[in-house]
Image 1 (cartoon, one colour):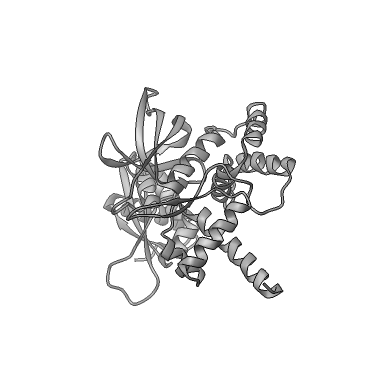
Image 2: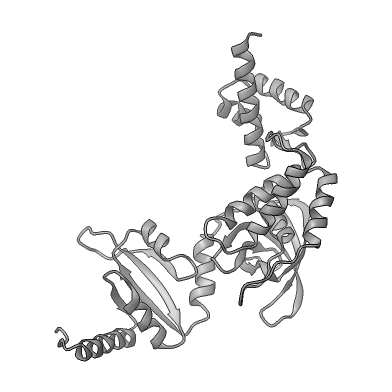
Length: 331
């Protein structure tokens, strides 16, 4: 085997390892197609990974294929033990913060690292977490990194999770769910999952989850919901008595960037228009005042589509501002 063949094989092995870490199960033919090789080459590469210490397991039968075991070496980052512990602890801290753009990636990376972390290092990471106290922010509930890892692992492996749960009245119960997605709103973490006992999709606040356990039972989601929309509906609209519909001059992607799930629900504008970008923003409150202030504070043109009492309140607010500053209201 010449130098180029060795290089190609090494690159392919890393690519194969990355694919095995990305999904809980791969059919052999699909792996061969993704790698651009024959199934026989995939079998040889799997043997090579095993010789390097990676526990690649083969599943036989109609739905056979390959999967990465849960007790392998660290990913090929050339980390020593101290570095691995530091990264795991750091990811755990980052995962439980509300820093935009950091927490989601930290949870995903932590779940991936946790899958291959040796037992001796798991004990060290647990010891550091147990002896570390984080000063919580005002009104921000604490989320346990180990809980996040367990739920994220369930999502990634499509593996059932059983846990204790405190409802909004503080009553304790037990839930068995098929986890789908974890959503971070900027203030809280939510798990979107199919509740097996209730045979329906539900959202769960992660800070209320206790002692999650992966049961080993696998499943396949059929027609899963839009996780972000489901969390937004449940947290920003359902609890409030007045729900407003606003048209904003942005396409859906830009509107969702400007108005995250912690603000409201963004939907496509399906009304006939002149071809200009537009989206519908749904926000809610228990009184008109906060909604009027929200509309007045937007730095873009906005059409208040409803309800009518909000339209009237916004008009009155505009008239008062215009009168106070010496300009008669329009129309």
